[in-house]
Image (cartoon, rainbow, N blue to C red; front, side):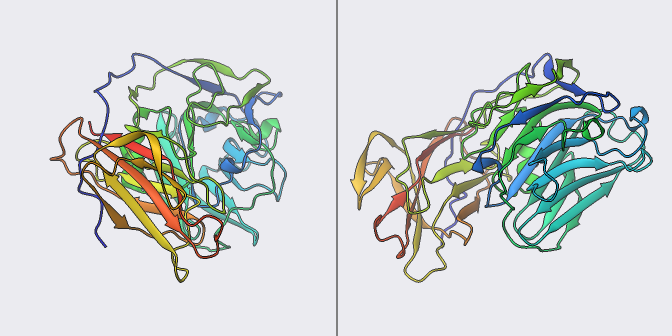
Length: 379
């Protein structure tokens, strides 16, 4: 199979470093918990893997007394029903363990990193991933911990809200420090992919990604998962310096849904020349290990303003200009995840267009289903 990683890609004009970043601040010692609450959505419990990330500061010296679990993010505050959490297991304030918990239908698995006193006091990027088998923790894009305890590939989805800055609603689970650029991706990203975007302030990221920039608001600037403020969390200017830039990947057109629903195409890294941490994803892909199932990626140099039909699927990549098809795989969880490093020699502002297509014999009502199109522009 030909690897579609050395093609002309697409993207944006250079962007300046923001003079001041906005974010939210939380105090664990307060008697009234403050946090952001996001209504339930299946996109907050992705069945294809997950990456949770945030910029944060944390000061263990100002925690309240007694047992404390300062939490960055938790999905479902009900004990035993949570899909995941990212927090510090502080114990009775004398423990410094950054922990990522994943719950499946079988049980809970946890990966932890013991950090030094004051290590997280200054702005630090933290990311946690789970790919259905392995959980990892990253600090500033460097892997610090791994757990291979397998409890089943998919996150438990018991409904429930998602909280940022708190876990179960009690004050002892309120974060103790600042949070900024909180994100959730429906795929386990690699270290290179995390590094490619960690210093960017992102918005409008395709592929069912959520980005909470916390710019005086709990709004999701990429997806439909905006939250609400509970007990008035404190927003304000902070000292974090990030580059304001889009991902360089834009969706266009619409999916032709398969039997599992509408497909969602996306990217896992910054569309920049020389970026080894770039990849393409498609959610609700067909499981191509089944006999007779087919997966294809169309790469081309043009797009259509209105689709043409092929076997009932809307085609958004222009077949009248140069392009080609590449065979691809989808897994049993409905994920296609392609590493696609962008060569350093790729011309700046070069554009390329992508679309995913699948056929599965069990989906007889839809002979061919497809994602929307993706436009990439290389920086």
